[in-house]
Amino acid sequence: MNTLPRPRDPHLLPVQDPRNRGLVPDYPDMDDLVAELVLPGGASMYVMSAMETSRELIRHSFYRYEFATVAVTHALFALEHVLAERLGVEEPLHVLIARAADSGLVTAGLAAELDRSRLLRDQLARGAASSAALPPLRAVASVRAVFEAVSLLLRPAPAGPTAEDGGGAGLARLWEEHRRAPFPDGFRGVDVGGVDLVLLDAEVAGLVRRELSGGLDDGGIAVLWRCIAALDMIVPLLHEEYCASYFARLRAMARVAAAPHTPAAT
Image (cartoon, rainbow, N blue to C red; front, side, top):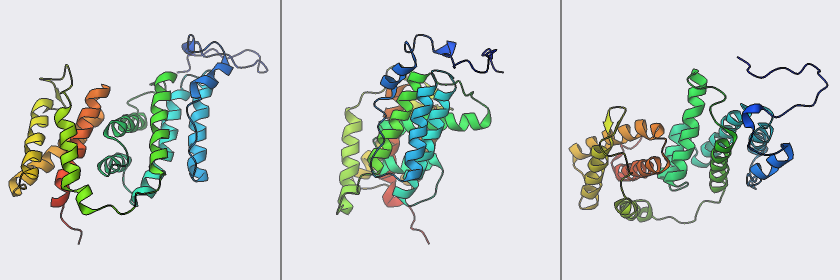
């Protein structure tokens, strides 16, 4: 239902959406809000158009609150296009985001932020969320994450990676990062989607230690893949920033540990 009154005179200039009062004093001040959303160089016309449109939707959310949420979903068009080109695969967006994190193209924390936007898009498509889901400030943060990811993905691929860099050494680095990170405050004893977060964290940690110290047997590999499936389910459901980043990194580490045990394509 449209909650905004319609202007009586069609020639009247648009007015600020009352839901945005307190955001900025006037429309020109929206420039400061979107100033850091700088279009990356080297992008295709399609990507540039989608990203510029998302930025302008946020600017015009001064007049219509829902434009902020629409801006996030529009930015994801650019992200999905760039991810598919960089990775050379056509997969659903959540798979592309996970692949980019696993490959080190984006950080685990950035991947978690992107996946939250993807989840919102899917909820909108199912009618489980409304176009007024995000206030403009939150939309700016989500669109900023897309701009950052696209900029990273458009960088030239590093030359000459070795097998060791993506294998044991990469897993050892991820393990050290994870080992030093404290478990998220307030999430001990919490289960998400029927998954106990502490137990999942401990199980993946034990499997990674076994992989680093000599390799997993068939039973361990099967358990690891079940853990990855659980992480794929819960990470998009985590809305607290640090917790989402923590478990996104855990998922990336689990995927690197599982990579040597992925069956070859036939």
